[in-house]
Amino acid sequence: SVSSHTALSAFTTNKSPSSKYRKDLIPNTLLVMQFALFLLCNFLCLALCKCKVQSHHDRSIEAISNKRPNIIVMQPDDLLFFDPWSPPPNNPNIPRKRTPFPDSGLPWIEKLRTEGIQMTQAYAASPMCGTSRFTTITGRYASRAISSRRKNAIFDKNIARVTIPFTKLEETDCSRDNLAATLQTNGYRTGMVGKWHLSEFDDDKYTYTDSQNIVKECGFDFVEGLYVENLSRNYNDGSFSHNMEWVTSEAINFINEESNDPFFLYFNPTAPHSSQSVRTALTDFTCRDTANGTLESDPMIEGMTLEYGNCEDYRASVLSRESTDENLGAVWVDDSIGAIMKALEARNQLNNTIFLFQNDHGMKAKSTLYEGGGRIAQFVHYPDAFGAGMTFNGLVSTIDIAPTLLDFAGIEPSYQMDGLSWKDGAMGDVEQTSSFKTDRCIAFEHGRDRAVRCGCFKYLKIYEEYYRSSSTYDMGVRAGYSNDAENLFDLCGGTSEYITERATSMEIMNKNMIYSETNTELNNALECHMTKTDYRSSAVYNVCGRDVGPSVVPPTVAPITPQSSSESQGTMKSMVFLSLSILVTMLY
Image (cartoon, one colour):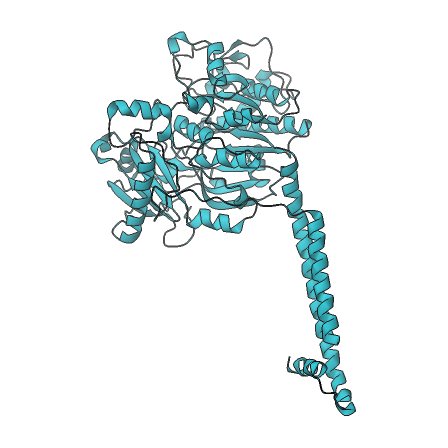
């Protein structure tokens, strides 16, 4: 204020004010003192708040720094993307269709979501179960698979064909360059339970033990509850079906192994995949009917069969809790998650376990590059790092899972990946979150079709030479999507936020002529992706953006450095000292 400025001038002048001036100055001096005290209080509050916030952040950082986390990655097969999880809009020909929770809800999956972090814009890099699993376990696009490069070389087309039979873990993809093998090498116990779909098997020579050994070669110490492929394949002799009790009990057996080492569990239930009816599995088979023969007794699992004393009564309870066949599998899977969380709690391991749950792909437009095929639900429960009700709004993909989990485990990847770690953004790095949302480009592959999303815009290219065999083109015809050879979509509808209203698909109208500059930019990003993943060339790893060429090296994000308690106290003391110095100076 003017008065305080006048008073301060009087104190700092070299001339001695008259006594009269000193008397007149008293009110102004009081103002100065009040102003100084006001500044002191503000600095003290700021210091205390900073230390309080920092100490909360320190606790999370300290929790994940002092002890390497256990890790569970779970991908149920063909699970629906339910309405409460904010799925993408419906197919245009069924705009009002609803996908509500089962009658009894999904309390355990909801616990993962509401008590952890929800990735609101997560994608499968390829919209089929096998190809999606490859991207999850390797952190690489499916077109990079050694098996894909070898098989596509036979056909010698301009663009690699991305399919399940072409996308397997072979050679170094299996022995070295994947999440399980990397964790195993760095002291983790590694386990795989459920559907695999990442190796080639000879159905005529199939044995359960041989199949276990093949999967173990890909970085796993423990392989049980194994389904090598879909249930409709010839390896299934008709003696078994979906069996959530069996796979859950094997997952818990792995968790309960006595060891001081952290663990990684890759858990992929076959349910609710339609290769066999879930209702038939519940009514015509028992818990003892497994892909490894007949069990001697029912598995007793807390949260599933234990409360009922037997398998039959438990399965009757599953049937009683859901009126539609479509959602029976979801109820069964939800019970399994509850049983695993109870097992973790019993071992006091729940807080230190990263439990990543996701769809393997979308179901509204499965096996296409439209949003209904690629957008997935993805939730990460990790109490040592994430509080309840958190969200991350950046673009993330299944290729990000491996680098992110290795980042949390403090392990430097031993091989190159396409994905990026979103750890810092999830932990509160605003800059990374913003970059992932507005600047990042991620690609999608299926068949010979390709797509890329950068910020709000998505560019979809249907391979013209084989467009009639393209499942994306076919879905466009049947469901009312734009299916031109080149398509540009504004997924935010002219706003800055992704549109999720069920009846408002943004992929009906091709806007490549309206946003010609954007169309060029995204086409460049897609060409960059196709160049770096070309099966005829040496592998190139770089980040493709609107203006990024294939020679650019991916940017690295500096890790969050935890501030020690002594540093926090030092910060507070410095701020208090500064406040007192200001007060003394002004009074002087």
